[in-house]
Figure (cartoon, rainbow, N blue to C red):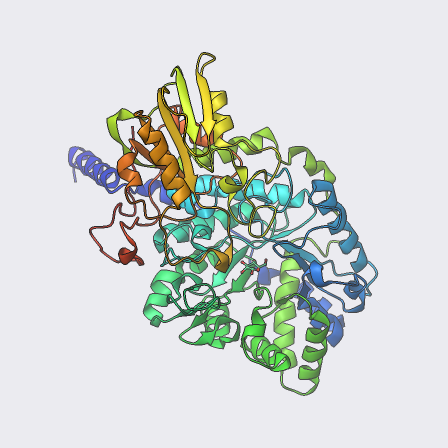
Length: 621
Ligand code: GLC
């Protein structure tokens, strides 16, 4: 092929990707991925340690209590515990400050020094969009927004910063990334997914792991990542959820194996390639069998077929859902391939039951040794067994915690995540010299709504949720010229006479099944706020803060411009960078946007042509 033809072909390809709205270059990791040292390369050291361990010490390594239920911290040395976690609301007694978290971590870690072998604990938290349990941490956009950036390098950078802020508290394990592929946006965890398209999830999930683990678990700035929730957590059938008839969460994925692999397995293929150290099975079931009990998927597929060398950590009390008898549940899940069990409230019972099951020959010692081998591989890889390395928090890292440099990256992510759905009458960009801008909507001055769930509280909380962030109203005030007047009313009244109105609406925070909904319409308060500003006879720019596409109805017609900002986190200025034209919008939908509820769900591969906006849609201006 001559040069001319070649360049023509290249131009043609570029044109095609732009019009498809899927700049494929973005979706591949920037540089060829770094080679990661296989966890099995630590087996010589692991075998030597394993040979010294008693059965009690081995079972202790497989036990992960939630600190909220750890009444007596001496359980750490008495039961040889291998790990602890802070579940959604399991916070330090002294509150959620950086120091309170760091002091708590150090206190727990010190207990392990009293054990015969001194094996340090791994401490896990849900650092899903920054170190989101800790006041003052940078809160990044939730994954649904990052999916709209299609920017793997940016997602990796976010992982790196998250790891640094997590390490500033001493903690070494983040239960992230979620590589779910949500198929029904009525699910409350849709926003934890990058996309309903596995092609996007696989690339960004890999990038997140490389960012968190730095391609080198021995790096003191790396944290252990956790790909979750294995498998098809986002593929459950409506009405099968554990929350009752109208739910999806923790339900049953009724799909064939081909679909399971093509749609839901992709993120695990790439995160295993990236060296992810842990994988978390889902509460949900596949064709009626709970994932925590699925030996075929946890052992035959994950460990044998895919060669996963790290360890499998259960979800929070997830093994309770296997059956009615707890001891039987313990035996089933461990024999199916679970290596460590996350427990709130009955860790002593778990230890007693598992010891008994081994002594009764119902759980073979070979299974225990395999589980502990996997756990110790990770601990050796992370330098936890290096006697000359402190396992307490490196408090020097606290100088960059919540820093302007970290916030600048979060602001960049917000900018790139915004998707412009409509821009009639060239309402965007807004002039910084406008005489008066009237701001409205329940979420305009509400950091909690901006951050969404998993922020300080498990469910998040509306209002002033954490210090250091910037609301969209504050961002507008700081963006405009000195001569511009900015007024505000949550309900949209009083907009008469303004140059234009900006109305910020959407969802209040939620997490997991509490976010399952049967109807995704805008709430009346939002519809009224938009209508009140419209009634003032001025241009209306609507900004939607939501964990998923919502049914917009007439609100879209009433708006001159409409922007999906997802759950952007603390850096509201990323939104105004786009609104005022300081940054050209690049965001592309990572989910299809249905016109009405009868179009929901739009599953991967559905070719419903009359959706409101297709996956990949996004306007430029
Ligand atoms: C939760 C979630 C899981 C989380 C774990 C620990 O219920 O399902 O994503 O990592 O428990 O908080």
